[in-house]
Length: 113
Image (cartoon, rainbow, N blue to C red):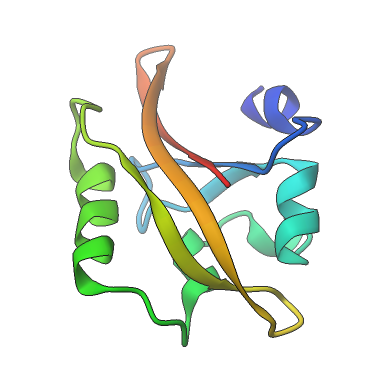
């Protein structure tokens, strides 16, 4: 259901499930695939941190993003710029917003890039 809602979004969107081990991506939009160069099949089931492997992400930024994942109330959010790496190896500056949403009594983490 979530995948169908965001798939055709005009912006890059990702959704992760913090109730699963390592908070994997469960849905990404077509524009997420375009932005990152990774296909949906390559992304789903992975934690989105694979996009910033070997990138310079400040410890404080990583802490805030982890806080979003662990805040069951959904009140913690993140907005900022982080380095990410496309599938082709090119580093890009990702302007990212992370926020919890609740659907059907479950919490999900939405990333808007």
